[in-house]
Image: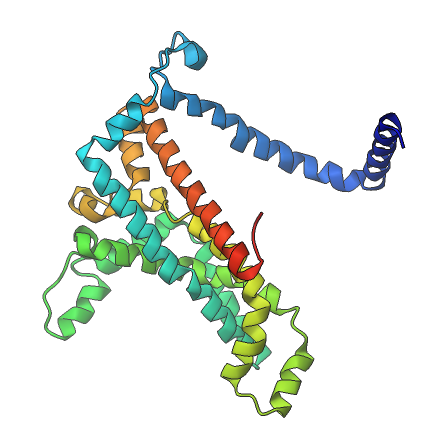
Length: 310
């Protein structure tokens, strides 16, 4: 077959494929456009990290400054604090929040009473649909000097503590509230994966006298392994990041020592301080670190388990 014939055959195949699945491709077009407009087009702004931006000249017309803003950030005394807080908050969140929905999904899977199981699942899903603003408002009320947490402490003779105003409690409150809000909804993907497990495997295990823990270890977890690995890769890829919107609602100058992360720092310097080029550079640094984490974790997962994103 000549090159011209190969190209012609490929064109016919593409046309036939498009005609056969035109409605599916048509439904995908809006999603593709949204991703392109809101995820790829804004990447044009990355140039700001290397420019001395001037409104009249625009991004392309503004002069290049190289790595000036990166040097400014790394020479800033606050850089170490924000990098440390961002990494630690992401790491602790990964260690506690990632396994939580897996454990809860395993517990749901072991429930035999289907009616009770559905009720508990529904209750666990509700917090995910509550606004983060409302959740932080509830947390502030519970943690107030006259809130329920201090009332419980008072029963044991302890003095009231301003939980929201003490740096040492910030990470615990951030992670605990995040788990409460998202753990139930996070079980959905694991339960969907477990729905594909052949029930006869459990029946055979019962005949062999396997305990519940043995069935979980040898049947349930192996079926969850691909899902766990893929989600773990993506979770590690977001370790060097945090929910800045939530932190902005929770933190105060009193908790900056543990709560001030790159996201909140760029908000203060960029939005409030109008240093757009500088904060673009800081944000680009954060993105590159997350990308490195993602690639390295994906490589390790592919070597150890033959499961990877790419």
